[in-house]
Length: 507
Ligand code: NAD
Image (cartoon, rainbow, N blue to C red; front, top):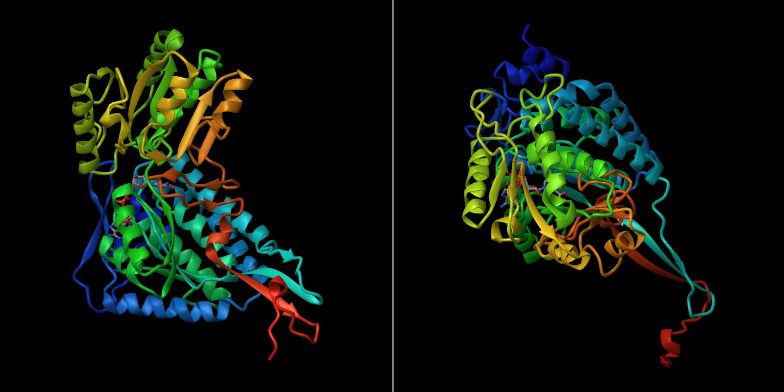
């Protein structure tokens, strides 16, 4: 039996492999199929039927029914379901990780790391299920009590990008569910198999807890995402994707005054000061810029480096880049897999051309590698004379722009001079530089790290960014509050009706 078939069998996807579509019962848009390709060799992995109108209505109705029951289930009991979800993900850690590699193209250890991230957020959410704290507030009126409570919202629509085909769903779903909501997932059309595999596991767990419909799935193109964004019955839209799509979603949801979380593109910089531990900075730069073939929202896209250490550091960087092993992401020892498709490769080539037109010097790579596979390319390093337009836009590919600075103030200015605001990093041993970078006058990003690169966040912190990155926060800290509605209660046991602000009214 070939490897793909074995993997599909392990993940109970054989029906898809055999040509039977898991949504074959869906009426309506039955002809519309999403094709899932293996980015490593460009071959077709499977076809999944897109959800039609009938299925859309059914999934939404089931999610609503689930919510009506779930909202009144004690939160710690809701946590038990998420504990079971975490446990089944532990069981399927390796095959799921491999499926992520196969369908998205990230290397096997990153695929497995992504599943680990799902497990971690489940653990976090289980603890959270006993900590959905509100406040008590001192009332100015005698024998009155004021309190703040958090209640479930309803159905949460989770629209996800291709590059984290499962973890982003889990960041949202695990928290949304302990908060008492149901979830409908619209995954990227590039990675439907990952979504089917994970959602089946989640739906089985929900079924075991007698709460069918808690995890809905709608595979399809952006049209289905658009429909969810328009739907007034979807209480919260959590959207992860590009800035351009995010802007459309923002307009659609705002038009109905709906709630949303936006997790959009980044253009992350790593600053290397001449006071840095350069060994550390080198490792972080390589990991941040070539990891996931430059297709992380937190990928290091800009290296802002002090002129006095630039030449020596760049030479070491070039040496490190030469040693990066590029190839089949499921193969041992490979550090960088393919880009996701032809368009991603074309975008990379276009960006390199523009960067050179804007005065850049290509220091390394950038060539397609058709002998390895149709969407492989060498990672590129381009030295720029200034932070030009192309450097200020996010190209979702392994291109690292190098820009030099003389003073730390210049470095900070360059760091903040882009429209995106997701993640930033500073390498320095200087306390003042470090403190300034993380101060109110420092980095304007949602994530700002010292002596750690731009990517690889832990789930315990709130994840998200400012400016065109959208302002949303997901995962840890108090990000859960976005999945609940806040209610202020005043309870009067006085037998009288004193008014606030000492007001008087004779009736
Ligand atoms: P994309 O914007 O092309 O697609 C994202 C999702 O939006 C897909 O599911 C797509 O089908 C859907 N969609 C398309 N049109 C829509 C519409 N009109 N209404 C609603 N949904 C619609 O993004 P992508 O190429 O899949 O992902 C890469 C981008 O995502 C990069 O910009 C990356 O930085 C960003 N990203 C951000 C984060 C973060 O947390 N900030 C995480 C991962 C990826």
